[in-house]
Image (cartoon, rainbow, N blue to C red; front, side, top):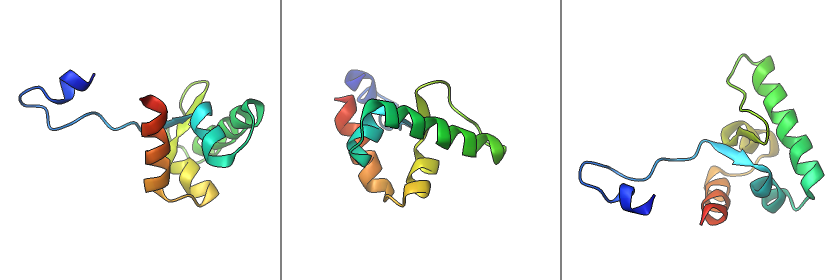
Length: 84
């Protein structure tokens, strides 16, 4: 994936728009079960608002950050560290 980001004509790596249970566990300091419950809650908020809800195990990082009052730069840093 890193080689693709540096290919001619590519402006950079694709930005992730979702958060996973591993990310939630790091950000909230919770266990896996609570992380999946949190993801379901964020997806339910998305559905109720008529927005896109990710499949199982993923949720919008923007809705998550808004719900918990976590700055996006912190959320993005955790996501990036977990993907490496």
